[in-house]
Amino acid sequence: MIRMNYISNLGLEKVTGGWSGVNYQLYHNFSSKFDVRFVGPVNPPVDKAEKILSKAGRVAGVKGNFYFFSDKRLKAISKQVNGKCNPEAELDFYLGSTSWLQCKSNRPYACFLDASFPTYIGLYHNQDEFRKNDVERICRLERDWLNNADMVFYSSTWTKKDALEKLNVADDADKHIVVKLGGNINGSREDSYHPEKDGINLLFISFHFEKKGGMDCWKAFQLLKRDFPDAKLHLIGQKPPDKVMNTAGVVHHGVLDKADPLQLKEYEEILSKATFLIHPTRMDATPTVLIEAAYFGCPSVAPAVFGIPDLIGDKQTGVLLNEKFTAEDIAGVITGLLNKQDHYTAMRKACRAYAMNELSWDAVTNKIYLKIREKLQVAAQQV
Image 1 (tube, rainbow, N blue to C red):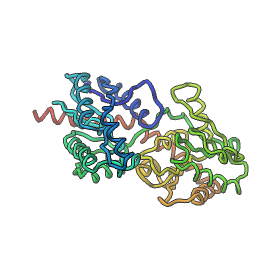
Image 2: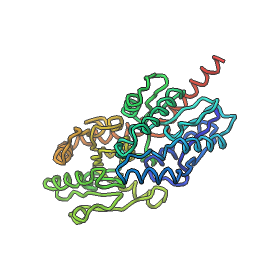
Image 3: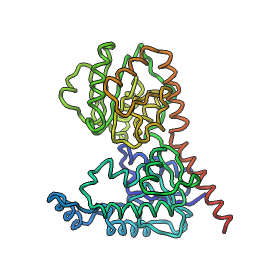
Image 4: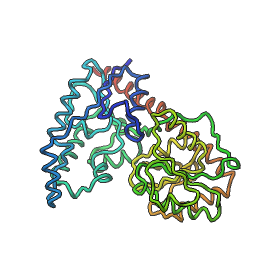
């Protein structure tokens, strides 16, 4: 069995979904395919002086350094990794890339990438607040680190294209490989949704209601109620504004913790009765909620941005919206499908089949395993 160091900045005890779910699923699925040593969580604190200096400068209108990935912290990360790794391992496997830019060993290394540093800072920060030279420093380090990696596995076609273009990394199809990703729950044995019995249940899931398009979802729901007055909108995550909460048909379930068996059961029950997941996001790289809904046969309506087209086959397993969509667009496509029951039923079937076959962690990690085994065998023959 191939010996692997699985290196992560996250622990395994807390799983909230998103990146922590990816971390948990990769490790546990790798454990059945590799002899794995978990190296983590590797997350040394930031240097307080660097943090204060950067923040004080930005408050004063002066650009600061991106202190979270300062050379000092990156070297501290490297030191921790070296101290925890199994020196007899045949491969180091990293969750992500940017935290590990100063990590070096004589072993081959690979990573799973959902967003490169240029993508991350563009989506979640105001890049203009940081010194150009410091951002470029991190990008240069990441470019070199990815160039020297033996394998880079991507969560989507968009993630790969975006990372390679922004970092000016040459594409090598044998090294840069799209494997997609899975959800952070188990799939259902069958699609149990019955339109006549369960009614029309629209679903929105996010810890950030307005940032992830919650208001567009709510507006679309109000439009749909003209034709389907008994429809309901189920919200999981952050509590929305009062005007949303006070709308007839809106049901807020709060934040559901998948680590709690009872809350996980409630979450899966909601998914199993959902007619559509509406995810009008403008800031997700590869939203796993689309996959988790699909495990239960629930198709999603989401914009054709970022890695979403790898998760939804337009008009087949869900609906991809134009990037400049409106609430009217959302309501229109849903109304059209609800009025074509045969098409909708076929979409649910195709949606679930695609998710179970292509977007399960077993399928994803099996692709990774086969590629790693092939690469190491070739390397051994060349020695």
